[in-house]
Amino acid sequence: MFDLKNVNYRVDGKSILEVVKLHIPKHKLTAIIGPNGSGKSTLLQLLTVQRHYQGQLLFQGRDMKSYSRSQLARKVAFLPQKCVFPPSLRGRELLACGRFPYQRFWHNQLSSKDKAVIARVSAELSLEKLLERRIESISGGERQRLAIGLALVQEAEVLVLDEPTTYLDIVHQLEVLNLLQKLNRERKLTIVAVLHDLNQVQAYADYVIGLKAGQIIFQGKAEDVLTAEILHDLFGVEMTTYIATSGQYEVLLPQVPYSPCL
Image 1: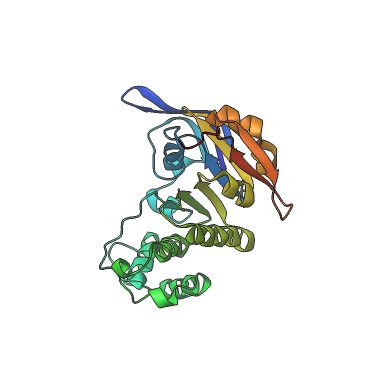
Image 2: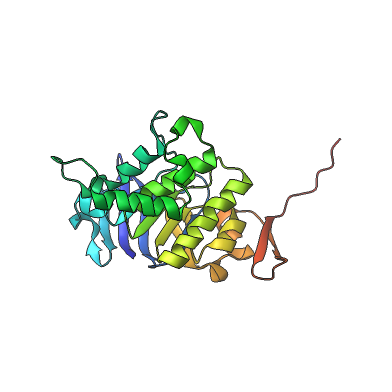
């Protein structure tokens, strides 16, 4: 889906991200992991909105810079780390914003197709009870589902998310991740997400990219790269692995030195 070669992004002459070679597969759920400040959010911006970089960045085999903003919005939906919506906006009005890439500037009314897409996505994500409610009255988990609905209404082929489970409790984290996995499996939606919980990455991701100090440390299938040794190189923390009770994957836990309370 994405191929990067010798990509360099600089700010005020300082290199923020250097990617010698990176491949992000189609129809997979790809997780990006790494320490804070390693360039994860910057990489997502390059895949979606940032055009000021050097090197080759291809999307579906075509130079990313050759896409117009509206063309790219119909193919790639981006949810930033903090989605700030007007609190007085209703759920239905928020979802309608996802149809902007398909509207002409002289005709901003929703078409019958726009309304059909909104209805379909609302049913798929069980958003019907939120359509007439104001953003200020719904919970964090519900708001995140609405945000994902907003992206799906764009009918994009790729969903890019920056820390979609941040600020959510464990119940809503799993709700969001299960939803993403379902969309990936059933709709073949390509998903790229920054995640921090390594066990959630282990459980949900097909492909994993490790970033450190603005450089790609590793990339590959989750079962091949999520090892104690590789994660130690990435985070500098000793890891212990355990087999999950389901037997389907390993649980990764950092080794914490024992320090009895005084």
